[in-house]
Length: 228
Image (cartoon, rainbow, N blue to C red; front, side):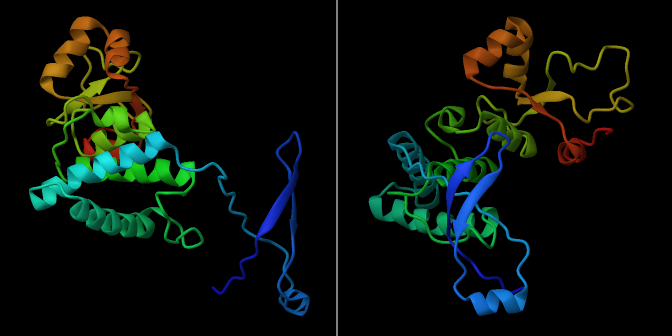
Protein backbone atom coordinates (compact mmCIF):
# COMPACT_ATOMS: atom_id res chain seq x y z
CA UNK A 1 0.00 0.00 0.00
CA UNK A 2 1.41 3.39 -1.02
CA UNK A 3 1.55 5.80 1.90
CA UNK A 4 2.45 9.45 2.18
CA UNK A 5 4.82 10.32 5.00
CA UNK A 6 4.58 13.70 6.66
CA UNK A 7 6.69 15.13 9.48
CA UNK A 8 4.94 17.03 12.24
CA UNK A 9 5.63 18.81 15.51
CA UNK A 10 4.02 17.88 18.82
CA UNK A 11 2.83 21.15 20.31
CA UNK A 12 1.04 19.86 23.41
CA UNK A 13 0.46 16.71 25.48
CA UNK A 14 -2.66 16.60 27.65
CA UNK A 15 -2.77 14.92 31.04
CA UNK A 16 -4.62 11.94 29.52
CA UNK A 17 -1.89 11.44 26.90
CA UNK A 18 -3.70 13.13 24.00
CA UNK A 19 -1.25 14.70 21.54
CA UNK A 20 -1.74 17.91 19.61
CA UNK A 21 0.31 17.70 16.42
CA UNK A 22 0.98 20.46 13.93
CA UNK A 23 1.62 18.96 10.47
CA UNK A 24 1.12 20.02 6.87
CA UNK A 25 0.35 17.77 3.89
CA UNK A 26 2.54 18.24 0.79
CA UNK A 27 -0.52 18.70 -1.43
CA UNK A 28 -3.94 19.90 -0.25
CA UNK A 29 -5.53 18.75 -3.52
CA UNK A 30 -4.14 15.22 -3.11
CA UNK A 31 -5.24 15.15 0.51
CA UNK A 32 -8.80 16.05 -0.47
CA UNK A 33 -8.80 13.56 -3.33
CA UNK A 34 -7.59 10.68 -1.13
CA UNK A 35 -9.94 11.69 1.71
CA UNK A 36 -7.37 11.23 4.46
CA UNK A 37 -9.02 10.39 7.79
CA UNK A 38 -6.49 8.32 9.75
CA UNK A 39 -2.72 8.31 10.11
CA UNK A 40 0.01 6.30 11.81
CA UNK A 41 2.24 8.30 14.14
CA UNK A 42 5.83 7.31 14.87
CA UNK A 43 7.08 9.00 18.02
CA UNK A 44 10.78 9.74 17.74
CA UNK A 45 13.11 9.68 20.72
CA UNK A 46 15.01 12.98 20.66
CA UNK A 47 17.63 11.76 23.15
CA UNK A 48 20.96 10.89 21.54
CA UNK A 49 22.92 7.69 22.10
CA UNK A 50 24.93 7.77 25.34
CA UNK A 51 28.66 7.12 25.66
CA UNK A 52 27.85 4.02 27.74
CA UNK A 53 25.62 2.62 25.01
CA UNK A 54 28.20 3.31 22.31
CA UNK A 55 30.94 1.62 24.35
CA UNK A 56 28.70 -1.43 24.93
CA UNK A 57 27.91 -1.72 21.21
CA UNK A 58 31.57 -1.59 20.16
CA UNK A 59 32.52 -4.07 22.87
CA UNK A 60 29.89 -6.51 21.58
CA UNK A 61 30.94 -5.96 17.96
CA UNK A 62 34.55 -6.63 18.93
CA UNK A 63 33.60 -10.02 20.36
CA UNK A 64 31.72 -10.91 17.16
CA UNK A 65 34.66 -9.78 15.01
CA UNK A 66 37.14 -11.92 16.94
CA UNK A 67 34.85 -14.95 16.77
CA UNK A 68 34.26 -14.60 13.02
CA UNK A 69 37.78 -13.62 11.92
CA UNK A 70 39.94 -15.11 14.69
CA UNK A 71 41.44 -11.71 15.45
CA UNK A 72 40.07 -8.35 16.52
CA UNK A 73 40.81 -5.41 14.20
CA UNK A 74 39.22 -2.02 13.56
CA UNK A 75 38.50 -3.02 9.96
CA UNK A 76 36.92 -6.30 11.00
CA UNK A 77 34.78 -4.65 13.64
CA UNK A 78 33.62 -2.06 11.11
CA UNK A 79 32.66 -4.84 8.70
CA UNK A 80 30.63 -6.64 11.35
CA UNK A 81 29.01 -3.35 12.35
CA UNK A 82 27.71 -2.72 8.84
CA UNK A 83 26.50 -6.31 8.38
CA UNK A 84 24.73 -6.44 11.73
CA UNK A 85 23.19 -2.99 11.36
CA UNK A 86 21.66 -4.12 8.09
CA UNK A 87 20.35 -7.35 9.65
CA UNK A 88 18.97 -5.38 12.60
CA UNK A 89 17.09 -3.02 10.29
CA UNK A 90 15.59 -5.89 8.31
CA UNK A 91 14.58 -7.98 11.32
CA UNK A 92 13.75 -5.48 14.05
CA UNK A 93 12.58 -2.28 12.36
CA UNK A 94 9.18 -1.79 10.78
CA UNK A 95 8.88 -0.62 7.19
CA UNK A 96 8.15 2.92 8.35
CA UNK A 97 11.18 2.97 10.69
CA UNK A 98 13.65 1.24 8.37
CA UNK A 99 16.53 3.54 7.53
CA UNK A 100 20.29 3.53 8.07
CA UNK A 101 21.38 4.94 11.41
CA UNK A 102 24.69 6.15 12.76
CA UNK A 103 26.20 5.17 16.11
CA UNK A 104 27.42 8.74 16.43
CA UNK A 105 23.97 10.31 16.78
CA UNK A 106 21.18 7.71 16.72
CA UNK A 107 18.51 7.85 19.40
CA UNK A 108 18.75 6.22 22.82
CA UNK A 109 15.85 3.96 21.81
CA UNK A 110 17.56 2.77 18.63
CA UNK A 111 20.83 2.15 20.48
CA UNK A 112 18.97 0.23 23.18
CA UNK A 113 17.25 -1.99 20.62
CA UNK A 114 20.53 -2.57 18.74
CA UNK A 115 22.28 -3.64 21.96
CA UNK A 116 19.48 -6.13 22.68
CA UNK A 117 19.78 -7.42 19.10
CA UNK A 118 23.57 -7.88 19.35
CA UNK A 119 23.28 -9.70 22.68
CA UNK A 120 20.68 -12.10 21.30
CA UNK A 121 22.85 -12.65 18.19
CA UNK A 122 25.80 -13.56 20.43
CA UNK A 123 23.66 -15.91 22.54
CA UNK A 124 22.08 -17.59 19.51
CA UNK A 125 25.45 -18.21 17.85
CA UNK A 126 27.34 -19.39 20.95
CA UNK A 127 29.89 -16.60 20.63
CA UNK A 128 32.24 -16.52 23.64
CA UNK A 129 32.65 -13.15 25.34
CA UNK A 130 35.06 -11.79 27.95
CA UNK A 131 32.42 -10.06 30.02
CA UNK A 132 28.94 -10.54 31.43
CA UNK A 133 26.28 -9.96 28.78
CA UNK A 134 23.84 -9.07 31.54
CA UNK A 135 26.02 -6.08 32.43
CA UNK A 136 25.85 -4.82 28.84
CA UNK A 137 22.12 -5.43 28.47
CA UNK A 138 19.84 -2.40 28.45
CA UNK A 139 16.81 -4.54 29.23
CA UNK A 140 17.52 -7.38 31.68
CA UNK A 141 14.13 -8.96 31.04
CA UNK A 142 14.85 -9.06 27.30
CA UNK A 143 18.28 -10.59 27.99
CA UNK A 144 16.84 -13.31 30.23
CA UNK A 145 14.14 -14.02 27.64
CA UNK A 146 16.80 -14.49 24.93
CA UNK A 147 18.69 -16.87 27.22
CA UNK A 148 15.47 -18.81 27.81
CA UNK A 149 14.78 -19.08 24.08
CA UNK A 150 18.26 -20.46 23.38
CA UNK A 151 18.54 -22.48 26.63
CA UNK A 152 21.63 -20.63 27.81
CA UNK A 153 22.44 -19.95 31.46
CA UNK A 154 21.77 -16.27 32.16
CA UNK A 155 24.88 -16.17 34.37
CA UNK A 156 27.60 -18.06 32.48
CA UNK A 157 26.20 -18.98 29.06
CA UNK A 158 26.43 -22.75 29.47
CA UNK A 159 23.52 -25.04 28.59
CA UNK A 160 20.62 -24.24 30.89
CA UNK A 161 17.57 -25.88 32.35
CA UNK A 162 14.47 -24.10 33.54
CA UNK A 163 14.43 -22.77 37.10
CA UNK A 164 10.99 -21.80 38.36
CA UNK A 165 11.20 -18.60 40.39
CA UNK A 166 9.83 -18.34 43.90
CA UNK A 167 6.07 -18.20 43.80
CA UNK A 168 6.05 -20.20 40.57
CA UNK A 169 7.53 -23.45 41.88
CA UNK A 170 5.95 -26.71 40.87
CA UNK A 171 5.66 -28.51 44.19
CA UNK A 172 6.96 -32.00 44.82
CA UNK A 173 4.19 -34.50 44.28
CA UNK A 174 2.87 -32.68 41.21
CA UNK A 175 3.47 -34.02 37.72
CA UNK A 176 5.23 -31.22 35.83
CA UNK A 177 3.77 -32.50 32.58
CA UNK A 178 0.26 -31.88 33.90
CA UNK A 179 0.83 -28.48 35.55
CA UNK A 180 0.03 -25.33 33.57
CA UNK A 181 3.18 -23.19 33.15
CA UNK A 182 1.91 -20.22 31.16
CA UNK A 183 2.54 -17.06 33.20
CA UNK A 184 4.87 -18.71 35.70
CA UNK A 185 8.18 -16.88 36.24
CA UNK A 186 11.43 -18.64 35.36
CA UNK A 187 15.17 -18.28 34.83
CA UNK A 188 17.50 -20.30 32.56
CA UNK A 189 20.31 -21.66 34.75
CA UNK A 190 23.03 -24.28 34.33
CA UNK A 191 23.31 -27.00 36.95
CA UNK A 192 25.94 -25.13 38.99
CA UNK A 193 23.96 -21.90 39.17
CA UNK A 194 20.72 -23.83 39.68
CA UNK A 195 22.29 -25.33 42.78
CA UNK A 196 23.57 -21.92 43.86
CA UNK A 197 20.16 -20.25 43.70
CA UNK A 198 18.70 -22.98 45.91
CA UNK A 199 21.66 -22.77 48.28
CA UNK A 200 21.86 -18.99 48.69
CA UNK A 201 18.22 -18.02 48.21
CA UNK A 202 16.64 -16.38 45.19
CA UNK A 203 16.65 -12.76 46.39
CA UNK A 204 20.38 -12.82 47.10
CA UNK A 205 21.07 -14.66 43.84
CA UNK A 206 19.15 -12.15 41.71
CA UNK A 207 20.87 -9.22 43.38
CA UNK A 208 24.32 -10.78 42.95
CA UNK A 209 23.93 -11.39 39.22
CA UNK A 210 21.56 -8.47 38.44
CA UNK A 211 18.89 -10.72 36.95
CA UNK A 212 15.11 -10.85 37.00
CA UNK A 213 12.76 -13.77 36.24
CA UNK A 214 10.64 -13.73 33.09
CA UNK A 215 7.06 -14.97 32.70
CA UNK A 216 6.72 -18.02 30.48
CA UNK A 217 4.69 -17.21 27.37
CA UNK A 218 3.35 -19.56 24.69
CA UNK A 219 6.61 -19.50 22.74
CA UNK A 220 8.68 -20.51 25.78
CA UNK A 221 6.20 -23.19 26.80
CA UNK A 222 6.50 -24.66 23.33
CA UNK A 223 10.31 -24.59 23.43
CA UNK A 224 10.41 -26.36 26.79
CA UNK A 225 7.47 -28.62 25.92
CA UNK A 226 5.47 -27.42 28.89
CA UNK A 227 1.72 -27.53 29.31
CA UNK A 228 0.24 -24.07 28.84
